[in-house]
Structure formats: C-alpha cells, structure tokens
Image (cartoon, helix red, strand yellow):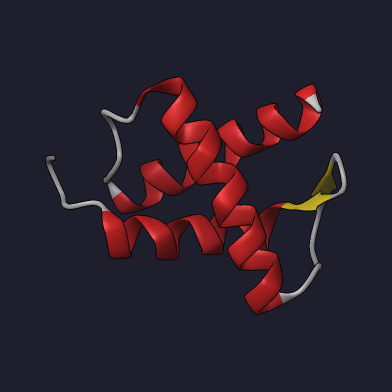
Length: 76
C-alpha cells in the first residue's frame, strides 16, 4: 500500500516535470494523479517497461501526462 502511494507520487512528479503543469497540486493531489495516471496508462498502453511495486512506470507516466494535459491549465 505505501509502495503504491510512493510510486503514484513518483509518477506524478515525473509527469509534472515533463509537462510543466500541476506544480501547485500538493502531495495528496500528486499521489492521486499518479494513481489515476497509472490506471489510465496501463489500461491504454499495457503493462510493459520497468516496474516498481507491480506498476509499470512508462505507461503510468504517459497516463499521468494525458490526465495533466486534459485537466490542468498551465500556471494554475
């Protein structure tokens, strides 16, 4: 459980750094973004690449980037 939360946070931090969005979300928001991004990414792109705590990192980051692009405006 704690491993999944840490992976969710890591995924969201990477996605926010790539897209330059979601900087002001806070820790809880980033964890939720990372978990939702992992779900979306693995649903769309499958379960490939390096894994941490049974979560594929590359598809998870791609899913989080998709969610950031849809829901968060730059600088908000």
